[in-house]
Image 1 (cartoon, rainbow, N blue to C red):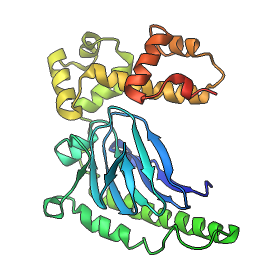
Image 2 (image 1 turned 180 degrees about the vertical axis):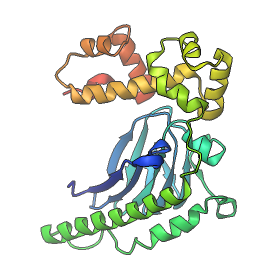
Image 3 (image 1 turned 30 degrees about the vertical axis):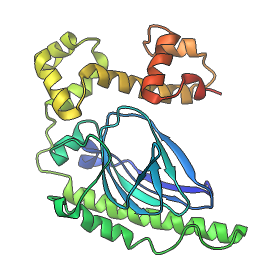
Amino acid sequence: MNSAFDLQLSHPAGQLANVVQGIWSASACASEAVEKTLFADAGSGIAFILAGDVLVDGEPLPQGVIMLPINKQADRLVMKPGSILAGFRFHPAMGYKILGRHYEELTLLSRNDDDPYQLYELFDCLQQEVNFDPGSGSDSVSDNASQNDSAMIQNRQRLKQLYQWAEHTLITENETPDSIQQVLAIIDDAEALAELSDKIGLSQRQIERLFKTRLGMTAKNYQRIIRIRKAINFIQENKQMPLVDVAAELGFSDQAHMTREFKTIARITPGKLAP
């Protein structure tokens, strides 16, 4: 395990998997800050800032329940020593289905506005697990190992609490996929809205309205984000493949086109992912 960082991540199964793509708890365990790039996935979520200093793109996040906006570009996460956070990552369009609204920016939820899910009850339960200081103690190998073990155990405990809450709260009796879920399930196979319209039985205007309402973006922008996310995974799994071949494999017009899209959405170049 990375001595500076512990992340416990669960990908739900069953009905919960239709709504939530990931449940996680993380701790910065050592003396140095931890930096992570959060690549865009067109999803949204909820984060619980439980301890320490956490920054996203240089902006500090207060302790509490943070409502995460739809992720259209990569973000840079910095966890200072002793920081602890946890949360849920929704599938694209599911945040709106659950919360009934979008958040345009990282937003601290007020306890007075905490309806109907009572997220601060969950926050308070998660904070009860924060009964140690991940940055304290000596620098000995044995103390560091014990510290990391404690972080892992408590992250797993928080993960279990989050999972139980989600199963109890987010699963509804009616799990029939709605129109936007049907569209997202086949959009990768459609080159244009007209083709998608024929497949799903909705007009192009209805499809665009769905994307604007549920995702806050156009169908084309969604396709761009998902293509870059797939490209990132592909490059990481095929690091020896020339980037010109990667671009052709993934349907970009050329390598320059892929690079431009990476700079816009991932905020890095493809070469940064390759060796």
